[in-house]
Length: 207
Image (cartoon, rainbow, N blue to C red):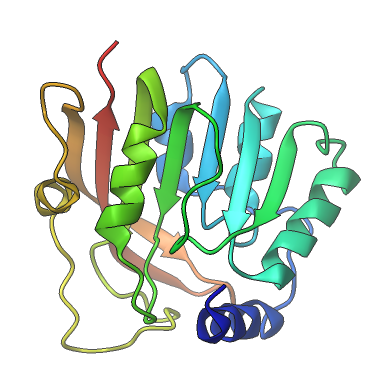
């Protein structure tokens, strides 16, 4: 376990109040609504809004985060909302091999970190953990929100096709289903709003 990453992300979650019913990411709800529920792996579950929403739609969720604070909070929320039988929070360092299993959906929402994670390798391993017909959903920042922990003015956000190229999958077996640059008005943790850009990538494993 990367102790520097643990301390950083525990500090991020301790610094803000735990939401009683965290919201799911809008790109998740837009993309997944209408899919048949199955097994899903949530990479970097954070406050747990995605995991709880997926469970409410009938998915069986394995939710990973390196932060013990985030994992304990999600476990408590799943129990409080009657979803403990569908949400399995696990403390996990994504720099280590993914948990065993096969999944119909693997989500990586805003999986950005200042602490040296080989993200391409993580996403490549995730693609290999998909069942045939399963999807890898990657949603990245395409702009910097005022409330982001990373305010580096020189940061560059790769386009979805660049992200796909970096993962390096054989397109005959993992074709790109979507590679979109999307814009929306987002609401930050303090209630402030801003126009932001999302980079959305969907890769599907061929049946």
